[in-house]
Length: 389
Ligand SMILES: [Zn+2]
Image (cartoon, rainbow, N blue to C red; front, top):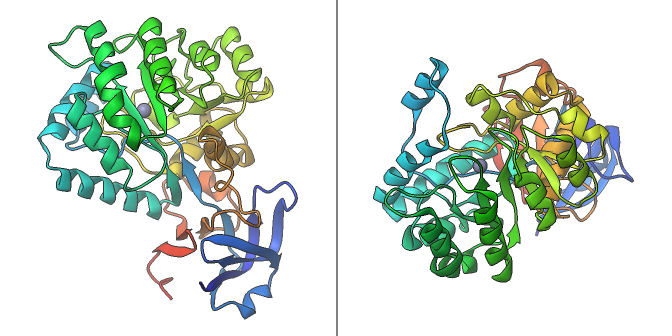
């Protein structure tokens, strides 16, 4: 195992309460872990030294909500929506047909390409959901493919009710044979609790069944309107309730008094022309928050966490520091992990070198690819041209 140092860092964001944000710093990785955070110049003794040239280093982004295993794309549906057609959950079925038709090798390749795209965007840890198979064999296959990329696999058989089957019969299948086939490959159970998908009673049945099989709940809730999903998630001990575009006072109270994280997916609200969630109100009430991409072909086809951070600051009332924390430490908390989302000693060696003096540039320079280098598990996973070294 060799050591790698990033030296001459102008500004190092650690997200570690004891270290904070440090000017003129060096960080040393030993294999897959952070070994030391020191003054600039301290990297001289490492086996390999990267000169940050006074630029900024942040923890790698933790993307706690993605749907990377799918085939096909829905650019035409998106264009129609931008021209005035409404968003509906039913478009998922189109991706299901394309995903079922793809070979396992092809699905794996497609997910790998999206994962590489995410690494280029500074995402060093992802959660990946199933949910475009919707029968026992295809859901199991999706979970297995997702498990090749992360240990945070989510079984989302309850994404939408497939055509030709009664909703309650489908819920019984998800809670029975499908869960049994998928649980060995998954850590989390999820359900799309929304009008047009699953109601509160069906969602409760799915999350309870998953819990009984050893999975931990998370939930898609309150994306398209107010509803019971957020409170249901809190009641069942979900690690995270995701979307939260519509939160009433009871939802905020429930979240604030719980360990459940509210995960905002603003690229989805962007891509569906929805209002943005009021993150300021949630944070001020004491709710723990995260930001994630929700990368999927229907409602949010992006791997750019920087774009999500920009939307959160521009349109959701978050400060740059809050948005960056939500996209790193917040994501880790939404996945109940302590090893990622920060650069304290002992953390996973996941860091991003920005071609910028501070994280504010993620918002200040929207759409500009500022990730100069991504270090994942102590290895260079991506370097911008000219930085290959
Ligand atoms: Zn989603």
